[in-house]
Length: 559
Image (cartoon, rainbow, N blue to C red; front, side):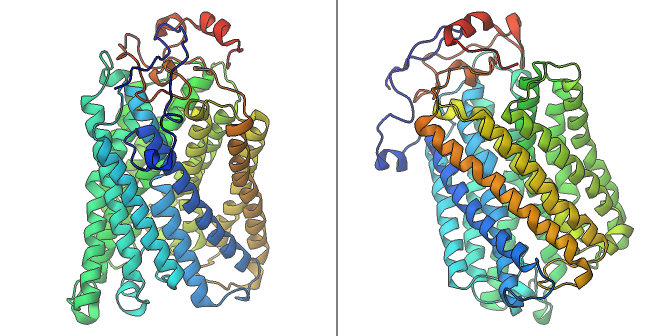
């Protein structure tokens, strides 16, 4: 193993001989790599492609809804478009985005390890993601599916076209990618922490990914088995879910939502971990209530498995079960509220700096707060009877899943971009993009709360004329949102070629990922770091001479 010079822990800086980007720069070396950082970059490219395709389907949906009549596409085509939008966004963007990209890249660096515990399994998880994605895209190009992304029976067992099986197989294979990633994160966190890196010195980003990994391992097999049962029923006509042959369609919903509600936390928990890092870093304060935020991540992962039934209040399940699930839905909001209150307390009297990542953190707080509060409406049995299958539901889960995850993902990507690439992006365009995304998102989805309350059903290509004005607002907002989301692609790619070279520690922080070069060397650290400071320390307590680091890097402080 080649010995690589890196920045020493006392702040002295040496030029690394080689970094992960330039070490054996060939297609074969990347496709066969076991370096967690290269795997993360390949995930970044792959996930971005799926996000682009899912976004194009979203644009088609909003263009159709610009007018009340179904005049852009037929109803059957519209069913396929919103199904394909949901499948690509949920299974191939929202779920893998932060864990596969930021988690893969940063978790070993944050715990002081040279790689994840199982590098070959990490590469296998990427290959499984590609295989699942290719199968899904093949099915979509051959004619697609029209069941909705939830694949509810009997649509997926009797009425739908044959490509349900191909999409199901793609999602089935992709599920194993999530399971292997979660396994790698858990084992790495338990066994590969640097000396002195105790559980309560771990960054909250690591705590969030640890909790997410528990959900991945415990929940993903359930949806995999559900899809397998669906395939068996379609092929053999053994009654599992189809009532015409002795099956129970409610059973499918129980199995599907037992995974799919915890899957919401696979999307949002990593984003919460990112926000903890951003708020502490750009308020220049130690995070308030570290232990409470850490344990609230575990609590969310555990309670997330107990509330799936609130998706089924009008499905025919027992009214007593509905009451229990309604109560548990209110309980699961408590750990999320703890995080929001502690983040707010961290900001209080902090030296807040409004760089691009912090704007995304504020955007996350705004969107997640709206999404969480509207979730309480949907946890109430009486209100849900009126709001189920309306655009209120669409608005709510986009605020939580898309608003929260996208804001956390982009905030983290901008925050660690200089560490990942060794280059700075344009702060000016970064701030413009963050504001456009926040404004465009609210203009797109907030009108949908009103549309849903007024009774506009989801999944319909046509609607009453009196609802057109709000739909025009929503489509106009989608245009602004699309511009905002396109801009980072431009200026981040631009930064790779023309961006200024990044310092090793541009934000002047004490985390281990900032105590190595930018970009990191192939094996992360020349020497195994020894951690003697607490998490989120600033100044002398962190063991980092900030003044000396500033003089050497010739940069001004981040705050």
